[in-house]
Length: 406
View 1: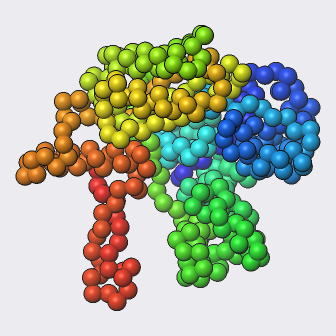
View 2 (view 1 turned 60 degrees about the vertical axis):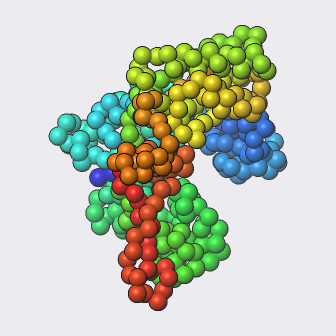
View 3 (view 1 turned 90 degrees about the horizontal axis):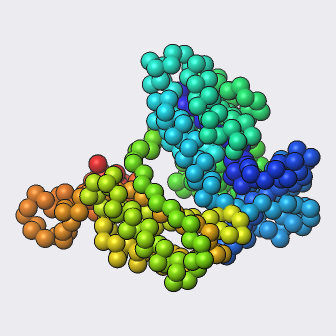
């Protein structure tokens, strides 16, 4: 069974967590929304229930949101605190032995079957997970919601439907029957099928059961791969979970004082890079990706993930790649933080990719190149062509793309 853990309005709760006045306004029924990032796309983030009742939705243009709700209170976004609070919540779930697949801040999945040998029954496992989240998440969430079902999508639908702290458990055929009556708007929670909501609504498709009855062939012919995936989800099927690989994280932070911008801030960044590379926990490994974040003097935060072109440990090259990102800092910074998101092989293993083509070391370097590509663009970025039916008259059937094994 797959467990979906949802922390409603997580980003909004984190942004307003230390502002008692905003908390009082929320209790009084005021409409709140996370403000757009300075210099970014002018669309609001997560919104409160009062704002939703007045027609404001996440991702809506700021001008339209203010037109629908003139007294909308904008909360400064804080991606730094959101990332820290969400990492604490994920680590809390992993501390009970769960392999967690984080979807986005406030939404995660884990498999409950493998935890029965540790915690016993499913009810006990859910209670342990809820207690684990009470530590880091109790001050940054407005109630944990859980859904349990055979597949990821069905569990997500259950977590979205429940309105209490009691988990909604769906099993076997009950899950498929229940899922058939849910609104088709649930497909908007998946990035691959979100674009289908508008055309399906125009066609008069209201529930997932109606969508499943249209047939896989008809949906694939009209919408392509997204249509096939939508039919699979509506029929109660989904892919397996992909738990994240837990890696050691190194982090260095420094209050910048008067060096809040310009050349002085770049010198502070150089100090952070030198400190990070000097940490004994690095054990000579190269850096594959890093995250640069800042707490802004005016309030809120800024965060950006940087993936290097290749795994490296040269402080000058790392500083050069990171200093370019400081130009997108929306406001003067009060503190700067640098953390490692992924490690590469030890420094002594770096060499030219196609040097000594007959050597077995070439295969090792090819695997390293594939790993770096996956860090940049995801697990499905590196694929191989597999010949399936070379005599087929349909070109798409001759060769298929398959993941390259680890």
